[in-house]
Amino acid sequence: MNLQRSFQRVYGFLLTTNPAPCCYSVRLKHTKEEAAAHRAKVMAKGLPERKPLPGVKNIILVASGKGGVGKTTTAVNLACAMKVIEPDKEIGLLDADVFGPSVPLMMNINGEPMLNDDHLIEPLLNYGVKCMSMGLLVSGENAVVWRGLMVMQALERLTRHVAWGPLDCLIVDTPPGTGDTHLSLAQNLPIDGAIVVTTPQSAALQVTKRGVNMFEKLKVPIVGMVENMSHAICYKCGTKNYVFGNETKQTAEQMGLEIIESFEVDHNMSECINSGKPAIYALPDSTHAEKYRKLANKVFKYIEDKEKVEEHAKAKE
Ligand SMILES: Nc1ncnc2c1ncn2[C@@H]1O[C@H](COP(=O)(O)OP(=O)(O)OP(=O)(O)O)[C@@H](O)[C@H]1O
Ligand SMILES: [Mg+2]
Image (tube, rainbow, N blue to C red; front, side, top):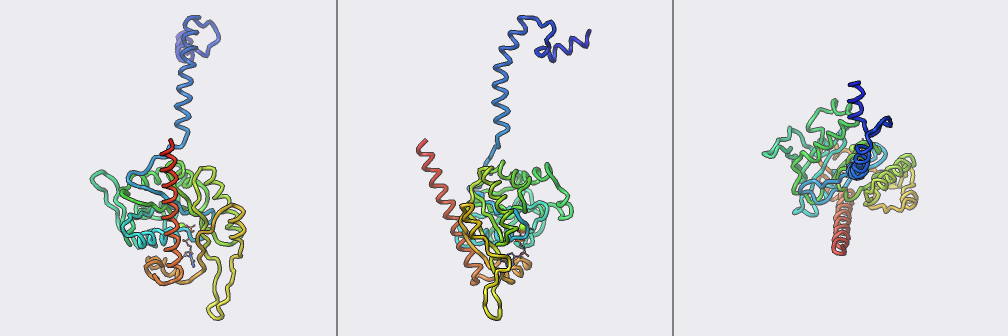
């Protein structure tokens, strides 16, 4: 009997046997209103809450579906080039590849980051760029076993527990694929645009298409496509060799994307990366460095245009 009463108390409005009429009608009215409020609350929760990072004006992702196509090389050189062409602007570089962080090596940063008075992690500075990476917080061997929720918690730390501000632009290097990291970043941060890096190989381009579709679904605008390792030039005769194929232009057209820069294979690039001195500093007169500066200019222009459109839309409201 007691058991039945307590069951009735908790689930009373669901019981069909012997409900008290007045109690039933009051509950029903109340339940409708409550249900509407509850639904609105749940829906608001379900929608991604893209909270800005304090002090960070713009966020640009560097992504690709496929691994090893040169995302980190692009992200590192782009961040440095942005600092070189606009020295008064504050640029940050977030290594969101918690499984295989390579920004510490490529930016030659090491050492334990410090906590400031607000208990935020101070990013490490090199080449004038504020950097943060899971590689600075845990050892690489630990990072590779992280999955799902842990990845999201790690990203939360790398974004919201770091003293990024003030920053004009945060460049985010992402891991390969279209997984938890991309979803988490796109759902939690107001991303201004994604740069999609690819090689001209059809396998890479197919995966790139998936990546672009994912960003479209997540309502992340695409800045454009960067073609990396487009071709190699023979040292002896200067002939162009399309070692990975030559399908980028066609694929970009199909997807309605612009190829905003194209980089050939250059063995100096890997040497720069291994020595922790990005090409933009190690070989400032090289074609690659020149192209990274052009890419940086395009990104600044993209941000400027986007801000103008947003201001215009606000003024109209
Ligand atoms: N244009 C280039 N010419 C020659 N080597 C390059 C070029 N771009 C990148 N590399 C080399 O290719 C390798 C992979 O580059 P990188 O680490 O930037 O790729 P990634 O897409 O970030 O890889 P991952 O998916 O593992 O994160 C590196 O050794 C890098 O030095
Ligand atoms: Mg990488």
